[in-house]
Length: 531
Image 1 (cartoon, rainbow, N blue to C red):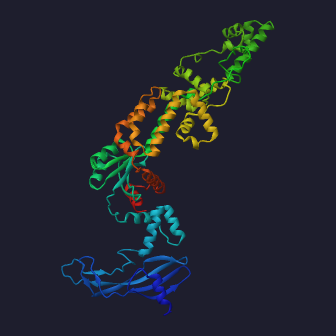
Image 2 (image 1 turned 90 degrees about the vertical axis):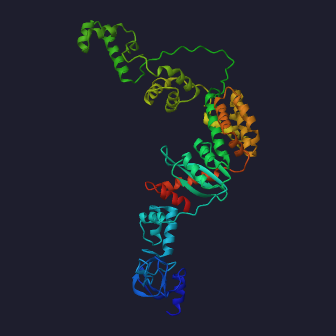
Image 3 (image 1 turned 120 degrees about the horizontal axis):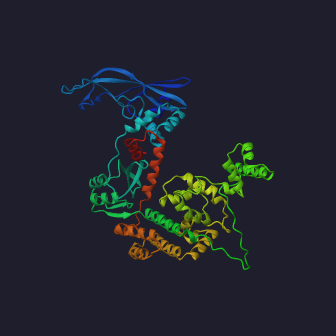
């Protein structure tokens, strides 16, 4: 044992000094280590005066990291010293072993550090499961309390700071994340996205030289008031995303050009006879019942029965039998107060018919489109109209046209990166629509500015984009760029961007999912800054 004790002391108490190992007891589940402190005197936590007068001693049982799958309990004998300073309000105090114990601590410092690392990485429930796996039984609430007890990270003043928003509760509560773009580390989290809060934070750090942000007005106002000496840089990824939305809107306005023109055959065409459409299709219960009654009434009348006799036999009124006798076809009887009356959908039926011919057969998509145009009712009316009326109409012959989103994606992609099939479809679409050809030219010109960092060409591009009359979405995008022209030019000229900030926003989303229901601002801030 005398030969093994130095190795055990080095293994178990390498982070602590002046600790003497007395004995080690191993059972089936627990390793009990008895030790005591060897210091001669200790400093009073109240006044700092050192004292060597021992008042008494007692045992503490802090848990240590598991060893070979067994729980390790340290039976540490600590002493209580008498404070010799008469003015100190403390009369006695207990010694603490640096690197091993702390006040009111039930775990050793290294077990506490391990649990904090697990909590910062996995939060409550997942962290508790991981800790239980390697033998450190702990609850999820204890892990969250350990995160909360951590000290605040040291404040730093970055040279280049990135600013973006994150959602604490999507659509209702938003916060602000600030990242040091050079070190790619988060600096702070703000509880809201107000301009005053950001301006106050920036004003406390006058050493900031560059602010990377999107074009949100509250971030622009806050950066201008809080750091007037800093250069503001617009994020290129946000600019490209906004251009993509404008391009998709432009393609959608010219969706009639997406379907290729049908090729007419050379031979003479026979005129098709107009089909007589019945307001009630075959299989409808009202239609079938009416057809059966009509056939029965005409059969009895043809057999020589009088109308009154037919009425008595069928249990119908005389006027009803007369209506059936006057009708040459059952379809003439398909009338009622609900037939052919005006509805709110009538004004939008030509549009629905045209979109059906264009190839859009999704009733929900059609309802969303006419809702944007002012249709006040719900989806069911559009669904019934599509099922009863449009489903029976023939589809146009030819391949289904590409969607507006697909065409916008082709325009936003470099031609060399497109597959041959998509490239051929894009060329066919651009050949049918000169407006989309102009849109593709403007998009590729803007992409060249973004990739080559040629921000000095932006005013010229804005003028050419605003001059296109048939692309209002592109003109509005150019007009919005002109409102924040200096920031956008800096974003298209300097190498700084907010890509690292977007990465931390996604990281915050992961933390929120891990702490679902417990992701308060303070706890979330500690995890983001310290993990």
